[in-house]
Length: 302
Length: 302
Image 1 (tube, rainbow over the protein chains, first blue to last red):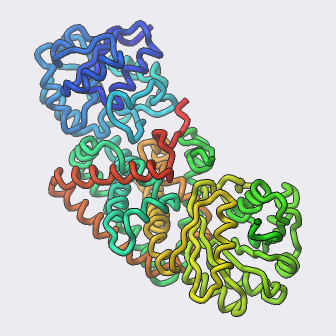
Image 2 (cartoon, each protein chain N blue to C red; image 1 turned 135 degrees about the vertical axis):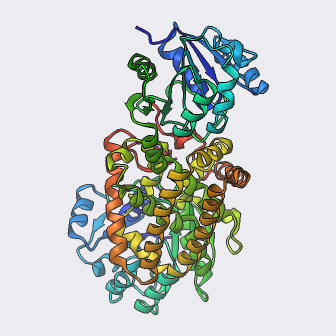
Image 3 (cartoon, rainbow over the protein chains, first blue to last red; image 1 turned 90 degrees about the vertical axis):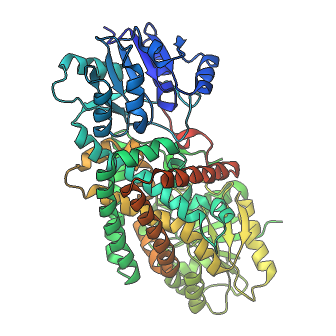
């Protein structure tokens, strides 16, 4: 049985538009309504026929939904939830796709104290943004982490899990605070480091920006991909998951200082030991299907 | 006219074996001799028919060469050069593929004071190592930086440039010390950061290593690719290009501290400003053909 019959997607960026397309592909009988606060995005969504219906207001978008998914930057979740409060059907389940969960749980609960809210986070994406960047297979083989709050009816959680399974994702549940610590390591810190290194490289004096771009295949270009991600989304993530991010950042800085010292004092053995250890992690990621086994991410070499 | 007729490749890892294959593809009439200090690598090279001939000693490998390319880790360049000193023909040109140039120029000059040495660095690679990891198109569309030392005959430099053009590379010349500063930014720092972050992530207590691997698609997996690069090669690079690496690392740490402070004090505007700026760099890299335009490096999403 399909977990939901009428799904409303609020926010039609990369993730929201991928959900809409995924529903079309995997659950074609489900009616999808879309809404975005930006009229230009709504127009694009109509033009590319993204949903069965694009509503003009958040309220009309949710009026007959049995699942409403908030797909806006985490700093905008509270406002998006408040926008649907007056029109949300009592039996509808509300979910989201935010990259951090504790702050979103708090914001949505404040705006919709009586709603059944089942927070979710599909760990998937690309560096592109907007309704035209989405695609139906974005979630295939990726993990979707659902972080139910205490007291949520198990059946509501199970329907959200089943929804994500239908979109092709693997599902897992964990507590919101543990989610935020895990993602601080696997996603937030990497993005922060990538943004920093790209900034550092573009601020050099002796080495020109055109040289940095020209010789970026030496490794730098890898970092520029995630440093091209949506600035609003990521600003919000760092502000919302501040504590976990600052904690992991502190550990990273300590480790970097130790490595800096090893280089300064010529301790080749220390470098070699770390560089050998990190190789094994890559192997495990490939074995578990979380990255392409082809060298160089499978980039075309011709 | 072909720049060389008999090329010897010393060191048959990813880069050496890619050169051998590239010669086969682009200059089929050139005779390629290979040598590697490791007997197991020589055996593999014979088995996969990598070269026209695999020599048993470095001396016999170079005896009738007109180009000898040293493709060993930068810390082993001096020893590799010393190994061929007694048998190197007077008119042969010696070159290399090392990722830093000042230290290599010094080491090779000490071992081969009378040889014509034209240092080169193809800015290309994958995370894989060994003779079976190489492929003929590795250098297609990538830059090869040649760093001639003062007093080198222009014709010798031109022959090396032409050799790399024939392998499909774009060529550029610059001074060895400038090369080392440019590559510290575009290659050495990214590798160091990637190694660090993968180390940090695998040393957490509250977040398990299996969680890090499972949810790596949030960004972390991008870093694991270059952190899977050859440990010996990279240990040598950091020790050999110490000054430039420590300098850029200091700048990176300052920038990271500023960002950390912006997060702590909730300065969203500062974050947004940086995150918007870094997006433009990615666009330039793609426009200049230095990375795949497809989202997510063109990774398969199915």
